[in-house]
Image (cartoon, rainbow, N blue to C red; front, side, top):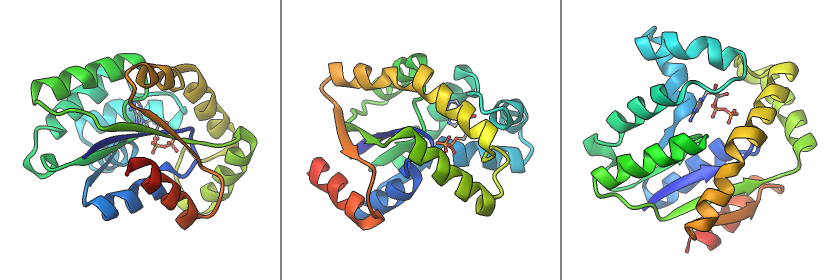
Length: 186
Ligand code: ADP
C-alpha cells in the first residue's frame, strides 16, 4: 500500500502516520523528519533547508523532489510506504506522479486529516514547549498555517479529481482517530 497523508500543521499527521504504518507494516517517510536529520548531520540538503524551515517557509520543490526521488528507489520502501508532509505543493504533486510512474508505483489513497485552525495553533504552542523544535513558536506556527492554506490545501482538489482523496475528522482522541482512518482505508 502507498499512501499520502495531508493536513494542516498540528493536526496529528505524524502521530497517526506512525500508528497506520505499524498496522499495515509500511515505511513512514516524514519529509519534516528527514529534513531535520539532514540539518543535524549538516549535509548539503540540510544546509539548503535550514533557513526555510526556521522561517516557517517551504523548502524549495527541487530539493524535495531530488531527495524523494532517491528515497523512493531504495529497497526498503518497495513493499509500501506512507508519505507524511510530502507533497506540499502542486509542482511537488506533479513531480511525485512522475517519480512514481518511473518506478511503476501507484498511489492507493491521499488521506486528509481535518481540523479547526484555532485548535491547531493551541496544540502546536503546547507541543513547542516540549518538542524544542525551532519552528514551534507562535509566530512561526501562524506562518506555517498560512503556507498550508495557500500552497498545500490546493492538493485536496488535485487528489479529489483523481478520485484518490479521503477525508477524516482529526478531532478526537488518538485511538479513535486511528479507527476512523483504518475504516476509510479498508
Ligand atoms: P508540520 O507538518 O508540523 O509543519 P513537518 O515536520 O512536516 O511539520 O515540516 C516542518 C518543516 O519542514 C516545514 O515547515 C517545511 O519548512 C519543511 N518541509 C517538510 N516537508 C516539506 C515539503 N514537502 N516541501 C517543502 N518543505 C517541507
